Image (cartoon, rainbow, N blue to C red; front, top):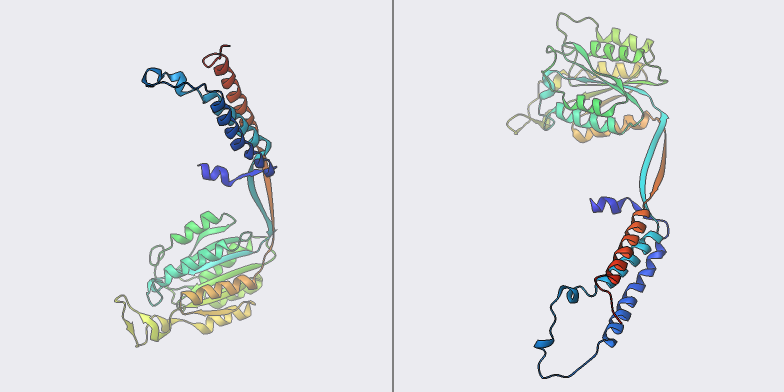
Length: 337
């Protein structure tokens, strides 16, 4: 608590602390004066002259109070101020929808600890790095669902990302088209000048019988709405696949063979975006970093400080110590001529 108080404390006149040199000088003067005022007498034994009263034990208290008065006044002269650092972020953000595959294959451990966990972690870092953008979250497997509408509430969005699990929400399968169409629909109601979708999947279109929109139809909708789509294909190379046993296998992984890079390339190219392939965690981080650089927001950060004067408590403390010294000097420690 004391550390936090000192951390946010500034002094308008710090040179005033140089007056503390007066304290050791006053102590030297007091000791010298006290010793010179003590009478001396030679006796054969001193036990009869020993005084153990409380007044004798606390005889230096008035002088200590005087030093406390001086210390408080010096601090008050330095003018302590409590500093409140504030930062205001302003800017013109863009509208972004993270469209993430949550099908069962996202639980694969070819990218440790799993594709799903890595995708969540990197997406969270991306959200934190975009302070003024409006970002939403759409998930899909055998159907699509808006997990979080477009918002500026980072805490809510990050909480939704962290709660994602493969095979948990929707029927299994992969409907890239419906996921893309849902993401475009989320952006159609916004007024942002730039609208972007980041579509991440580890498979190809594998729809159930209930599919409503195919990928090419969703692509045409995105082009009509002038939405830019960045696509990310996520799976490790076959030679680096790690199964649940933790043993690397050289055989082909059936999960990586389902990645439809041709479709993902087409979606990205025809909407003005770009296709990326993520083979590991570092690769995915690099991809999001590239997208972050490609889609810049105008951000203006204003930092300012507010000061609250805190010298009055030290002035009152000095007056209190002075008042107490005077009371003791003229009552309990009063000297008679």
